[in-house]
Image 1 (tube, rainbow, N blue to C red):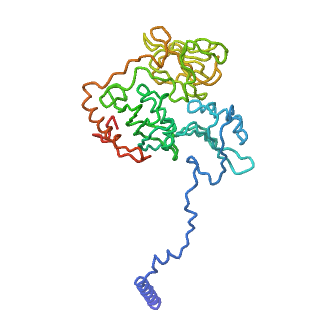
Image 2 (tube, one colour; image 1 turned 45 degrees about the horizontal axis):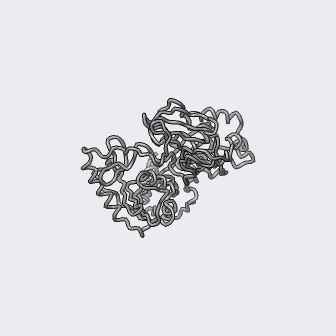
Image 3 (cartoon, rainbow, N blue to C red; image 1 turned 45 degrees about the vertical axis):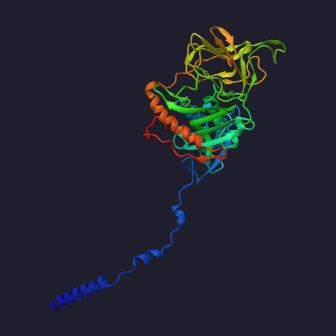
Amino acid sequence: MKKTRIWLVITGLTIALISAVYLKAPLVEQEEFISEIEVDSSFFQLPTLHYGYPIDSFEIVEGKVKWNQNLSEILTAFNISYKDLHILSQRSKEVYDVRKLKAGSNYSIIHDRDSLKTARQFIFEPSPTEYVVYNLADSIFVDVQQKPVKVKERMLAAEINSSLYEAILDQGASPLLVGKMVDVFAWQVDFFRIAEGDKFKLIFEEETVDGEIVGIKSIKGAYFEHWGKPYYAIPFQTEEKLDFFDEEGKSLRKTLLKSPLEYFSRISSRYSLRRFHPVQKRYKAHLGTDYAAPTGTPIRTVGDGVVLEARYHGGNGNYVKIKHNSNYTTQYLHMSKIARGIRPGTTVKQGQTIGYVGSTGLANGPHVCFRFWKNGRQVDALKVDIPSSSGIEDTQLAEFKVYSDSVKNILDKIEYQHQETLLAKIPSDSEDDPNP
C-alpha cells in the first residue's frame, strides 16, 4: 500500500515538473507559423456584377429592342413559359409595364450555362438614367432602379463661325445645351439670323452617367453677343418661380414661349398669305410656321392654358388646340400622336409635352405646323408682340443685384480661347441658397 502511494507521489511530481518546464520554454513564433501558410487569393475575389447581379456562373446576352418587338418574343427563346410571361405582365403593370419596350433601347439577359439557357433576369434601359429588372429566377418581380448621375459644373466660351450648334459641339459639349440656350435667349436673339462673329459664354451643370452626357441640369449664367449687342442671362428664384433676368433684373422671358419645340433643325416654312403647297400642288395661304424635326420629337405648349381640341381631322392630321387667355390661342398640327391625357378641357402648363412630331394629314415630311391666334385672328407667331413676364420685385432687387454681380463677374472673366475648365462655385450665403 505504501509502495503504491509513493509511486503516485513520484508520478505526480514528474508530471508537475514536465509541465513547469514546458510552460517556461519559448513558444513557436506565431508570425513564422502563419507565414508558412499559402493562401489562395482567388478564394477572396469579389464576384463579377452586372446591374448588381453576380454573373460568374451565368452568361449574358445583350441587344437592342427591335421595332414592334415584344418581351414575349425575346424571352420565349430563353425557356420562359407563357405562364410565367403572363405572371410577369400582371406584376409589372404598377411598376413598369412590359408593353412599354421602346425600339432601339438596350437590354441584357442573364441566363443559365446549359442547353436550355433559361433566363434569370431581363434588364431593360428605358432611358440613360434608369434600368428595369424583370426577375424570373426563384420569384417573379419587377424593379426600377436609377443609375447614379454625376453633376459637373462647366464653363465654355466660343465665337460662332457657322452655327450655334457646331460652335457648342466644337467645345465638347452636348447638343442638348443648344436647346437650353435657345430657350434662354429666344426673345432677344434671332437664332435664324446668327451673324459670323456672334459670341457666347456659358456657365452650366452637366449630368453624366457612366461617363456619358445624359442631360443639362441647369444654366447658371449666360452671355450672348448678337450683332454687336450684349445680352446677359442671370437665373434667379423669385417668389413665384426660377426664371432668367438681365443684369438689371428685367425678365428675359415673355408670357409665351417662342417655339413649340425645345430644339428643331430649321423653320421649313413661314407664315404666308400665298405659298405653293407641297402636297396639294397649288398656291394657297399658309397661316402657320413649320418647324422641321425628327418624328417623335416632343411638342410642348408655349403657355399655360386649357385644351380646346385634341383629335385627328383631315389635312391637319393629329392636332391640339389650346386657349391661353382671352387674347391668345395656339394650335399644333401633323402630330405622329397626341400625348397621353391631352383631351378637351385638360389644363396644361407652359412647356408641357402635348404631342410628338409627325407627318399626319397633308404633310410631306415630319414637322409641326404652329398656328397662332391673337384676339380671334390668325397672325404670324414670329412677329406677334408678346408681353414680358414680370421682373424682379423691389423686395428682392437688392438680393438679386448681389447675386447678379457675382455671376456677371465670372462670365466676364471667361476667355474665349479656353475651351473648357472646371468652374469654381459661385459664392452663396449657404448651401441651401435658392440660387446655387
